[in-house]
Image (cartoon, rainbow, N blue to C red; front, side, top):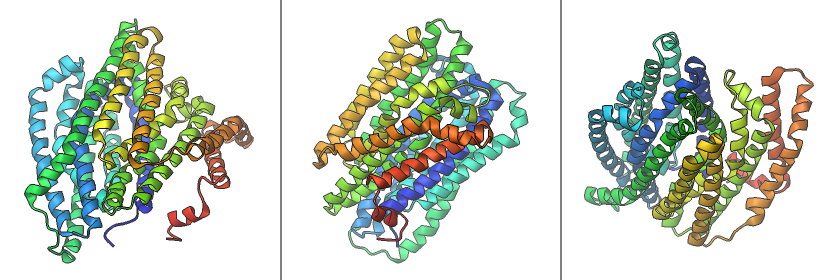
Amino acid sequence: MLKKSFITGTLVLIITGFVVRILGFIYRVYLSNLIGAEGMGLFGLIFPIYSLIILTLTSGVSIAVSKMVAEECAKNHLSNLRKITKCALVMVISVGLVVSVFVFTFSGFITSVILKDSRTYYSLILLIPCIPIIAATSALKGYFYGTQDTVPTAVSQITEQIVRISFVMIIAGLLLNVGLEYSCAIATLGMALGEMANLIVLYIVYRWKKKHIKASETRIGVMRKRTIFKELLSIALPISFNRFITSTISAVETLLIPARLFAGGMARNVSISEFGRMTGMAMPVLFFPSLVTSSLATMLVPAISEASSLGNYKSVKYRVSKSIQLTAVLGFVFTAIFVCYPNEIGSLIYKKEKIGDILYNLSFSCLFLYLQQILLGTLNGLGKQTVALRNSLVGYAIRISFIYFCIPIYGLMGYIWGITVSSVIVCSLNLFTVIKTIGMPLDTINWLIKPGIIGLVMLLSGKYIHSFFAIFKMGLSGTTILAISGNILIAFEIMIVIGVIKKGEIARLLGIKR
């Protein structure tokens, strides 16, 4: 069967996301212990530029291919699948090469004037080969997401992490002796090698799959290449433009944080270290649970496109509503966990750096940050990219205002307040648009009250659960892991009791019942 189910695809992505993020955590912890908070801050300075280029170049194409492939699969026009993917590959690789030349030409200006730290030069140079590679990877991922076959992307992502981590661990001794500038460059080289491995795996699987699909192709509904390019551009350009605007503002936001800390009287190296603790250590912990929501958001785009093309709007409403409910549960559960055990979690992951205070303050934005991913995926599936951009710009304007005016006075707390306020407002605007577009009622009981009950129970019982496991004297790490696992298990049991997840849904999720 060419196309797999929405639930199966999402489950594969969640499991993959868990494995990839565990490997990513191992990598980040290992790297942070090698190069410290200042090194992580320096490494983090490259990522605004990296995100600006990569997200602008790839996000629109991946979603466009996913959407078009899903629609053609629903109509059983299998001959168009290869043509769509081939056209997308030609388009993004060409643009990727042009962008690579541009970045190489202005690399000195970018590092010295924009990033304001010449130590990032070699890292930026080593990112350049990644641009066309990641561009090609995004088109292939779009094909697999469109057919809801998530296993190839799962294998490629795990391979990427293994290659990256193995490379850094093999040359770890070199990282300790060459200085921060070259250490960050070597870590960037590991990332480039990982991206190459990702593309190789995807391309091999795509070639193998293509032979099997070709045997069942017909000439019914064949699209001309000109039509495909035109449709790809009509979908991809608005999304890519949205990403360009939001990534540009995000880059400005990221670069402003150490600058405003410095303006508040903090030394340059200390401001970079604080920046590294927040963005390189605490934020990845906060976003770890979002592997569920990012997986749901990825699969919602082709699922909504497929259901809409067949006129099955009941399926669209159900999938969106259930995704919002599960995300709300996830948000409340991990808000409670981060509130109850911030120092324990920080000490468990990062031995040398204390991030408990940052994690505690960030925890109150969990619910809204996770919901933003689901609602953005829904808006992309519904073709509401312009509205999504407008709402995102409102959020960024709020955050930048907090960064500029509050950080010099209140330090990183000013930024954390900005994250919380902006995420609440953006979520509200996106949710209003989704409800209005698909005519779905506001389900307060399932979206707020039931998930809120689960979060409240966990918040009240969190310390008692930790005290219970402390009896077994397994040390801080063992006790913390058992306490978090116990909380999640209790949350899952409450979900079944109050009807957030029904037995029939669990059976369908496991493939026991269709």
